[in-house]
Image (spheres, rainbow, N blue to C red):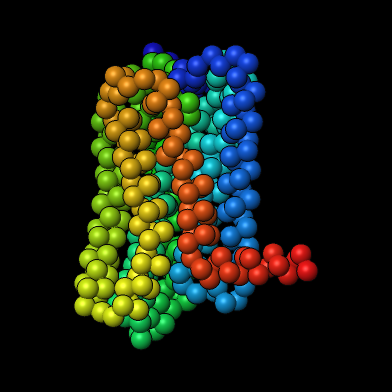
Length: 308
């Protein structure tokens, strides 16, 4: 039995010996991280600088892009450091910090997507009352809740990490909450129960709001004009794609944490585990930047202005 106060490092055992391919992996991860930073920062700047984009939908998008930077920054620098490591160890405080970032990122992502679906519901179903219902105060409150609730919940969850640990080996390429709970010597039922409640309450509330919003949007589309349906398709397609992508990625990550997935090849488990934290930061800027005409047009006009 080892007291967690004496555990200075955790060892990540899911890494494979990549040999000379380590240089290739490092280059790919670095390029992906640079692409994530550039694409998300660029879209945040476009939204902030252009007053015509100071609308509720784009404020929520800005919050989403900030979260992509937050989540990817909790993983990519860590991966770059581990690729050339022989021991694949991580200091205990950094491991706890990564647990906090990874789980709060997922919760903020789901809540942001839920808030965006509510915004689309008001814009499409109540276009005349939209500006009176979606006030600046309400926008700020929705963004604040989508960030503060996960941060408070995760702070409490990290504080419940078992005091006594019997091992210091984590069978993943990064730290996560359930992997640490599995190292506990004593019964960690309280931590498991709180983790399940926090995870599924966030997912359930978010998906319930998303489902309600899209049922109402579909009802309006079927009974409305062609212009209404076109507006719904243009604004909701990237949002729906983002929801489906993140839900699938998150479902596998939760399943892998809670159940025995050893029947899957190790490389596939690593890939799908990393997909949860890498897909959205790449996927969202691409989808919203290319699909939403207002952002796309302003971006290309700015490029033309710079070149001229």
